[in-house]
Amino acid sequence: MKLDKILDVASYGICLFSLDVLEEFLKKEKVRSKKILKNFQDNHKRYINSLAEGIWIPFLPIDSIEYLIKIDNYNQSFGDEWEEKMVYHNFNIEVKDTLWIASIGLFYEFNRNKFLENDEISYQTLDGETLYSGFRYNVPSGKYLISIKGYTRKKKLDYPNPNFGFLFSINKINEFEGYNDPREDERYNFNVADMK
Image (cartoon, rainbow, N blue to C red; front, side, top):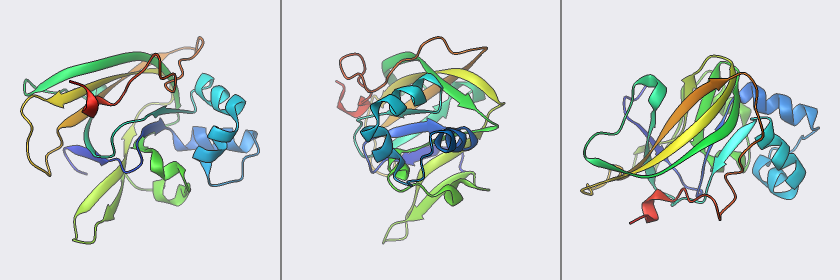
């Protein structure tokens, strides 16, 4: 497993989800299509229910580049060479054993087999570079509120060093009380790469 988790976003968004929770929800909703993102886009009520029940959290739009991903609960943080640009709190997520942080593009044509028995999802570019589109974290089962902080590097570095990143905090709760919709563009801006 890579020490630095650098997520390659090729589809303008990141999402958090727990595979078992997502699959149970889709089964309950009788969703058979593998085009999960389109299904949520076409069914607003289902999308809202998915947020309220903590099925997934989509953070978008963001630039399609590489981001350094860290989780506060693993004693990870961004050092002095980074500047915090945004912070938002209280997004619902329910976890069964593992939590994925992944490029939302994996929801265009969802393939559950990619997530089984893997700690990361990667692919090779034409010139042989390995890029990562998802990382799995072991998180105890339960209901959580997620906070997200966005960071930019104070002095930009050359590729392959990411100059932007996200820090997630996972806070266990007993029950969800309401929900926040990260797609409310008037309330939220996650595009840290575009912040001055």
